[in-house]
Length: 285
Image 1 (cartoon, helix red, strand yellow):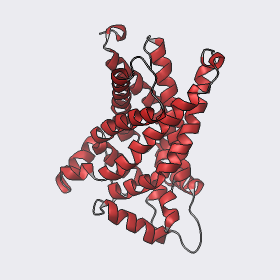
Image 2 (image 1 turned 90 degrees about the vertical axis):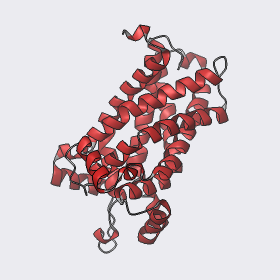
Image 3 (image 1 turned 90 degrees about the horizontal axis):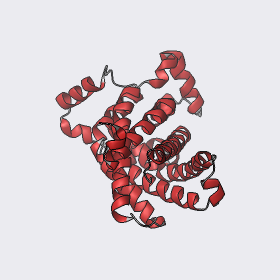
Image 4 (image 1 turned 45 degrees about the vertical axis):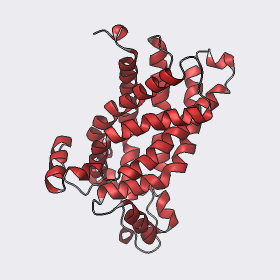
């Protein structure tokens, strides 16, 4: 079936999947560095030495070569291609159902973004768990299918949904806050910019601003989520206690720089590509 004949929701899914593919391939190294930072043991930091993003980056390149920075890209693709597609198609469906003849306000935009992310997050959580384990370097999985099979056999299928609460506490607010700031900042753009050839660049800038704010506000939940998913024996409350006992309050902001860079750039690129493609095929994004 040609794209022009497809249902609008299918078109939104395909546009979202393509935008997610581009952004994932570019920014996977930042996600790997973020995961390594969050799963470092305090005993690995002798004295007062501080392990930062550059240290981890150089360590990965030195021990696993340059391509080691893309470790976990397979589960990232398996998660992102359908996951971003589900997110944007759900967002499009909700927006068309509730706001077909009007534009959502700040609160409505936040609810739209959060609702779409909740659907996509729950659906793709098993692959998110596998992705976190690939990136942390503690597991010897050879493939996504093999990892899924290993987890089900050794820990039970329930382990594939570990970190559900922390994931929702991270992703739903992030998406809601992001869509709210993104839509409202775009609304303040002058009409001549919105209709000009530089509109994608202006939208990308709005996306960066929204991404930075949303990333910083949801960083603690991301740290908790990572700990729960790479340490199956930990519950959410236990992970919070463990992080605080090991690193204090600053432990909840471990990996904030690479995550903010990655989430901000990925979200800005995904939304810019999605909106450009939707406009190209004649749909209002």
